[in-house]
Image (cartoon, rainbow, N blue to C red; front, side, top):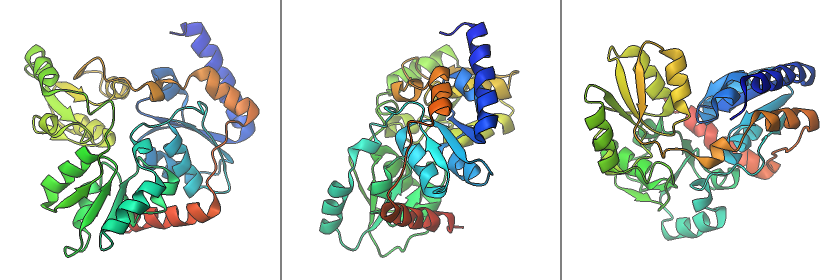
Length: 307
């Protein structure tokens, strides 16, 4: 861990250089606390990209993983998009490729293909519509009932959406390697330790864990719920980085991780020194080829049109 003085020095250097570069810094809620604190916006991946697109910034520094920076590049093609940790990927996003998806689509030619935002730009370009964990139920419910739905890549989110909409769905066999391995036994142990706490569960968790939840939601939805609900204690079944935001926003409440192991190494690879280096060098850059960007953008715009 960085000493407080080092965090302060790096934060000051980043803040100064950010102004010089006319940059905006985005941080996903799973990032390290000190990275979240230096950011202009903290939140979900697509929400962050949309916020950045609405700014006058010339440079976007995305403290997240590769598909998130691609989404920023899709929505802000004339801005320079930087991913401070160029090796920050997403194992779930890597579980579906454009070529594999094209092959699957050929076997179900009438299907509407829905992709979770946790996918590459190339995969989005092959799909009909994007969804987030917050709006997946609404997106699938909006689709023609006489069409089969092919849902990629998260089978757990897909199963949750199917249970909420009653739609039979063809589910890609992908998953988040952090959420997938949280067990019902571990959640039961957390509840036994904190019997008065409400259980908040991300829909990327396995169905047996989702079934235990008091409330199922995206990260933004969880944060909102904890602010609106009078309960004083919460068990949080998602990546532990979000606990910083819970405790910062609601200091009079108690928040506990469903399991200490819920730590994504790809989210933690971004550090303040890498953010500073990215601003100094304007590298590593993330770009999306225009032909792919246009098709992926159409996929995103169809989602935004869903009321």
